[in-house]
Image (cartoon, rainbow, N blue to C red; front, side):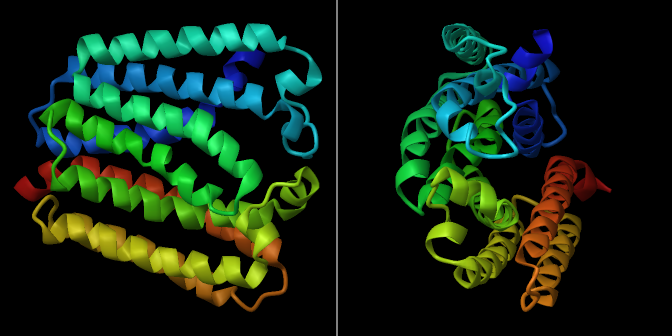
Length: 286
């Protein structure tokens, strides 16, 4: 039962977002790290994301029953009662927001509150009704590094804005890759993701366009003196490898495989980028 509740909070999403939250925090800290604030930011963020994901599982339990990869989730199989899931999600959310409000600052709390509302309510509606749901979903997905950054600075400046757009443009190819890889699931569930509503070719083209946009925005962090040359070179090389991988398989008829490769390599890009952003201040001093 404990394991079911653990997965109800979608731990993979939590861990992935904590990596970017840590990157934003460390970038703003510039080697002068307040470790207590850092732990509070990560703890509060983990609880808030877990809450949002648990609410999302509750909302999506009907859709999840139609997809092969999600039909064994606890709310679909009956391992967790829907009412218990709502209580669990609410407790996580209250604890998370209290942690952020008490131990970080109001601005970081507001950033995560806006992300929470977008993910649970607005994205929850959009994924059933529009192909733009992926774009809408990038807003909460881009919030963790911003929250990490403003937890330190208590100010939404150019650095926070660039981090936001970096994550927006990273997420679009990432999710389009999933939309191609899991096309049959999304079609069976009647979800109008890009691959279902606009077709494979359009999804592939937009994937490559957004990888290019990602390359531009990661350079902006260097151009406006928020990060150094080492960061720029490493992250641009990762992004270039991502783009080349996409171009090489563009004409391949095995679209699902192409999408899977784009998705899997996006994870490498995200981790590499986050490490370089977080380590930037130490690298600049070398």
